Image (tube, rainbow, N blue to C red; front, top):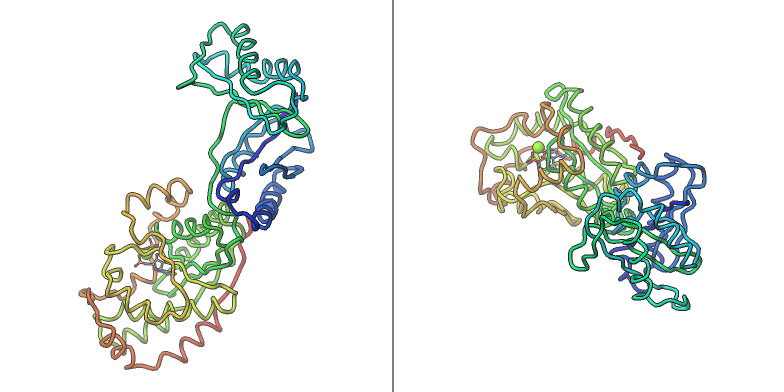
Length: 390
Ligand code: ATP
Ligand code: MG
């Protein structure tokens, strides 16, 4: 008995003339990720990707776990490969489905005939295979409306395939199909989730992080690197830029009115991010902001931050509650790292009473009290880069 995996597309299937570009990016991503766990042949036919283990890989669970994190895949089916012959389909099904059908109470059979030349029509396949399974497993009853197990037979061009489970894929579009963007990555809960959400839309992300030693520790930086590493599961390889931010923060503290400290800091973060984005071919920035979460995320504060940006800033969490964000961070396994207790540079020198509704003209005036340009240039020059690989 031979088991392989079939992957079904979601949105890519609707892409018309561009479909093959999306398909090839997704297949490239799949091959790259699977290289780590063994040898596979990965091919496509009829809007389906076939993943066949070349070597004797007896358990495909690890393969499925990797595939579940690849964007562009709508569903994952472990299937048994049969001859295009009804009696082989029956024999193989009895063996392949034995475990699952021995314990189920209800089932139904569905059939998909991509190869219309197959001599039996779909209803006939369902009836006859259903009969064979009922005879072998007396514990079973047919329930077409709400079955515990749905046995699917797919008649395709070279073979027939039988399966009984449909595992949900990560959905979205293949990473790399929508260009590059730069994620402002803090050590918090929100920004890794924001990166995940944009990667899901096919964006290949790089990450930028600001550190203020000695106010922020080496451990805080390592925490963010750990987050980056974890994010590669979904996002692919990530270029990580670490910006020395101490001098800038000290200059803001010593030269600008305290109540504008945070908003000026965020404007300078944006300015630096844009310059790095330009060098790294990123067409947009991504942040983990959500309206009203803190003083720097009121509409007025966001407007003041946005005023310095020359490229689009994506804030995929803008309308989400913290509980919804936490739910995703648990799903993508960044929550436990994010909640480690190290400080972020945003919490260094925070004013007691930040302006909740800063006016842009006041912020500009406050910022103009010091010439930040030389420090900004220096921070960009001194930025360190390293790459985290899948
Ligand atoms: P997070 O949970 O992502 O840290 P937050 O709710 O703590 O977000 P802020 O600290 O105001 O909110 O940060 C808002 C956004 O600014 C973050 O989501 C992130 O995109 C960016 N950011 C904050 N601090 C840093 C940092 N040290 N380096 C890079 N980006 C940062
Ligand atoms: Mg934060």
